[in-house]
Image (cartoon, rainbow, N blue to C red; front, top):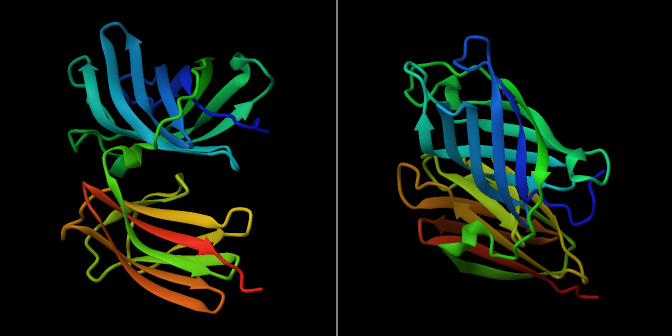
Length: 265
């Protein structure tokens, strides 16, 4: 079970296993993570010795209710490898485990893959593998704004007042499918992470009540697709109420829809 208020801030060190044909079938890996309300940023340091190491940016999300951690390496910061070795940018699907109260009892583990099973040169293969890390230090949680709001403006598309406790949302690409990729946050908590908009809906279901009568849904454009800006069709169903909104996001703005619960009885 996960403790109330648990976050992943701090340093995690462990072992990453690759396929036997990899340059380093087993080596040490270190994550330094910052957890801002479930939005994860930080670095991943891979190393086998002082001459062979790679450091990368890493981003992702942590869902406390399921203990699930999704991470993705985004950019290379430092590379020192022997000749003929090519880095792989990895995506991790991990779970958090806690055996006791000590830091040493905290662990994250799971699997990793590389996009299209290819290295950064687009040629060498990167077969999937496993990873296990233990927390070695825990940092004080910093109360900062989520990363998605720090450099972008949340533009209010519409404020909707509802008398229903359940909101059903469907997100589609608006018009031509052009590889628009989005993340969706509800009250600063990630619920959709880097999913491509398609003709088939991305479903979202929200609950709203008198105790928590405001839900802010923010769509972040993770890219601009092939036809900028990043656009989406949002279909909203709440009781007898129906809405159809068109959202747009780019490098400077996110699309915000605010729901307010106002029961009629």
